Image (tube, rainbow, N blue to C red):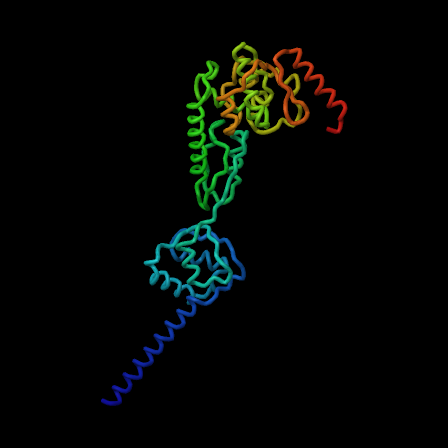
Length: 330
């Protein structure tokens, strides 16, 4: 009997020592530095702890043995009160331990990406920017012309392209409503869409901030007098639907080609926007400058010369051509 008890005691002792050794080994694996030599941004896949471990192992954060995975599963279970694991694009420090990795998976801030939509881009160009943006997922319905507010938008890995586009369109809807509510009323601009169309033409005509209200005044004065708007950017849009520059200077044939956007041919404003205008152009359309200007022409210095009469305008054109002739390299 004594021998039996002694044997049981030895077995129990072995079990206890084995358990302690297992716990000690698990604690060592949990806290030991990992193999990743430098900090990295890693996309942790969706699908639970198994997919998370595979993502991190494949990225070199963990040793790839089955024992490490088993201890990771146990550690996730034991530390579950600390919070759920997040599938996201996260930054992990160099030689991160399993303990550090679990903290990042639960409390780390996802990497923020940014997509800038510059002022004056067409729907086609905005769609290309969305398609090329990294870390977005899925397809989207191309926006209607002028529907997107030019801004810089933050997003995280895995966001749907359509969801980001929806946010861009809501931003334009809110901005246009606010500008419309604070506008200077003008009978030529009866509704917000007309203001958007005018703003899109202003956006494409000049990049000089102080000129935008003056361009708005020229177009409004022409509308009031029943004159054709004769806007070159609207002609270009009618020819290529916003695909970009034509690749050549507008010809007489271009200016006489009938399209719904050729404001040398059609009366009034075109039927829709020709780009997505920024806030400054929207405000210029809502608050045009004062004056009787009817014409403007590039002055060769990045801006424009404005005129109230055709004679004055022709003198500006002659001066511009003279400057070009004197500086042929430009």
